[in-house]
Image (cartoon, rainbow, N blue to C red):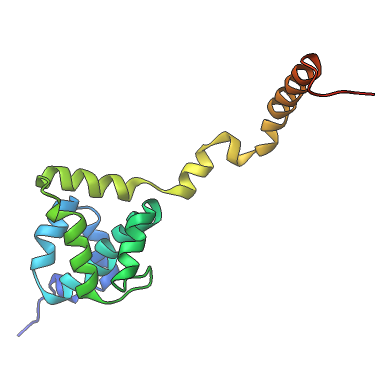
Length: 150
C-alpha cells in the first residue's frame, strides 16, 4: 500500500510557517491541543517569544518571570506554559482581547522601529537642533546674569 503524506511528516520549520498564517487565538486554542508535537512547537515558537517580548517591555514582569526560574533561553515547557497562561488567558480577557494583545506584542519590532525613525538612522540631523537650543540657553543665562563672561 502506498503511504500518504500528512502534516506531521513536514519539518517543524514548515509547520511554524503554516501556523504563522493563522490567527494567534487559533494557534493557542486549537493547534496547541492537537498533539504533543504541536504543543511543543506552539510553546517554543509562539509562547516563549511572547514571554520574551513581555519581559523586554515590562521590567517588573521580567523580574517576576526570573524569580520563578524563567529566562530568555528557557526550555522548560511547563514553566513557559504556566507563565503564558498566567499573563494572557487568565487575565479575564475575552479571546478577542487576548488575540489583540498577542498580535500587538508580536508586531512590535524594536529594530524595525529604529530603522523607520529618521533620528536613529541619522543622529547627525539632531546637531543643528541641539546647537540652537544650546545657543538660546547661553544667551538666556548671560542675560539674567547667571553666566558671567570676563
